[in-house]
Image (cartoon, rainbow, N blue to C red):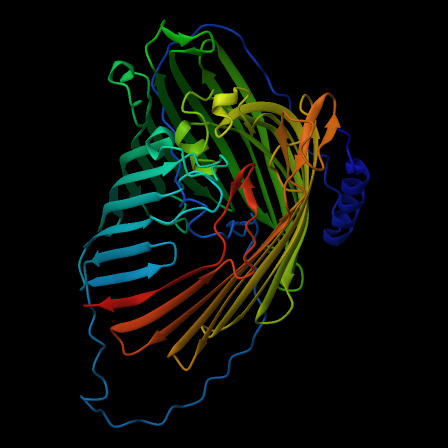
Amino acid sequence: MKSRFSIIQFFALFASCFIQFIALAQPPIDNGDVIIIQGSGLREVESAFRLRSNPKLIDTTITSTLPEYPLMSPSYSTQAKVSPIKELAFSNKSNRTEKLTPFYAKVGIGSQVMPLGEIYYNSIGKSDFQYGAYAKHISSFGKMRDYAPAQFDRTKSGLYGTYFAKKFSISSDAHYDNYGFHYYGILDTAGIIDAKSIAQRYQDAGGAVKFSLHNGLRDSSKLNLDLGLKYNFFGTKKPIADSLADWKSQEQYVAFTSRGSYKVGREVFSVDLNVFNNSFNYGIAGDSLSAIDTGIVQNDLILQLKPAVVTQLMNDKLRVSVGVDVTANVRSSTKVYVYPHAEIKYSMFDDIFIPYIGIRGGLKQNTLRALTNVNEFILPNSQLLNENKVFDAYAGFKGVLSQRTSFNIGASYARVTNKALFVTDTLFSNRNKFAVIYDTMNIMTVEGSMSYQINEKLKVDGIGRFFSYETKSQAFAWNLPQLQFVLRGNYTLKEKFVFNVDMALETGRKALVFDSTIANVVIENGQYAAPLKTFADINLGFEYKYNKNISGFLQLNNMVANRYARWYNYPVMGFQVMGGVTFKF
C-alpha cells in the first residue's frame, strides 16, 4: 500500500524539459475539481457497449494492444525527384485486374480436439452500398490435467453494411455471440465433478446504427456531425433447477452518441453529447435465495457533455487542445463530475521529435458484459460500480529514428476510484468463481514502445510497461501486473510464406487467498496474498500460400508449455498445435 516512486519529482523534471523544448512559458494546467452533487433525479435508461474477447485458454497469449497515443503522427522528411517514365506498349493480357472473390473461409483442427471454422462474405464491385456477413466457431473437447472439466464452445455471427453518399454516410451492424464454458478452477484428479454443475453460458446480441455528415474541416462554414445509436442484450444461463429459473443475470444496454465539429479560422470547436444507460437485473427484486444472495434490479444512467477547442500555432508546430467533460451519473442518487481535458504537443525537426504533456479524466460505465470480457469466471450477481478516473496526468515524447523505425516513451499518474478487482469468492462452495470488489488507488505507469516496418514485408512492434499501485483498502492491486512486455512480428517471404510471432511476459501479479498454508503466501494488512507465477508465452504461426485462393496454416501456441495461472487456480492449456486451410471463392 506504499507508493514506490516520487511522482512529483518525475513530472517536475519532465515538465521543465518540455518547456525548454518549445521555448514558451506555458501557464500551469488546472487539475480541476471533481464536483459531487447528491440529489434525486429522473431515472432514465442509458447504455454502455463492450466487446468480448475469446477465452484465454484458447490462445494462451494474454493480448495487450499497443496504445493509441494522442499525438500528431510523426513523419520523416524525404525528398522526391520526378523522372520521365519510358512509354510502355499496352497489353490487354498483362493489365488484367485480379478477380475479386466475395467469400473467405477458414477450417482447422487443433490439439485438445479443438475444431475451428470461419466464413466471411463481403460485397464486391463499385457500389454506394457495401455489406457483409460472418460466422465463426471454435470449441474444445479436451481435458485440463488435474482439474475439473474445462471444455468450451464459442460461436459468433454478424451482419454489417454502409451506404456512402457525397456528403453523408449511414452504417449499421448486428451481432450474436454464444459462449459456453465451465468454472474449471477446482482440483479433480479423480474426475468425479459433473460438468453440468459448473457450466455457464453467455448470450450476447445487439446492433448499432451510425449517421455521419462529412463536409470536411477545410471549409469553415460547414458542420461535421456524427450520430450513433446502440443496443445490446447480455444474459447468463438459468440455474439447473426449474424452480430457480428467474435467478439468472440479464442486462440491456442502450447508448446514444453525438459529436459535432465546426472550424473557425485556425480553431476547431467540437461538442460531444452522449447518453448511456445500462439496466441490470438478477433474480427477483425484493426476494432472496439466502442472506447473501438477494435479487438485484439496477438502472445506471450516464449523461455526458464534452465541449472542446483545438488550435495550432507557430506554423502548425504547436498544437493545443482544451476542453471539459461534465458527466452526470443517475443511480439511487445523482452525482455530477467535472473532468479537465488539456493537451500540448510541439513538433520539432519536421515531426521527427514530438514532446507532449496533458491531463484527462472520465467516468467509465462497468457492465456485466464488460467485466466478463476481462474475467469470464466472475459471479453472475457481481456488483456493478462505475470506474471514476478523477485525473490522469501524462507526459512523454514520440518520434521517428528512421523511415522505418518509430518510438514512444511516456509516463502517467492517475487517481482512480471504484477500480474493479477480481478475487476468489469467500464462500467455500464458490471458490472456483470470482467476486468483483472495488478500491481507490493511485496508478503510475511508465512505458515505452517501438515499431519497425519494411513495407508489407516485415513488421515488428513491441511495448514494455511498468506499473506501481498505491491502494487504499486492499493490500495489493489483485491480479494486476507490475511488469509487462509484448512483442509481435510478421514476415512475408516472396509473397508465398508468411511467418508471425507473438510473445508476452507478465510478472508481479498477486491473488487474494484465504489459506495461510499456501506456498509463498505473504500477509499484508491482515490479508493473505499468493504470488502468481511469472509467465513467458510464445506463439508461432506459419502460412503457405499455394495459390491466390488456397493456403494452409499451422499455429503453435504456448511454445514453452508454461501452464501459468491467468487467474488463481485457473491454469491455461500447455503446448497446443492447430492446422488447417483457407479458401477464397
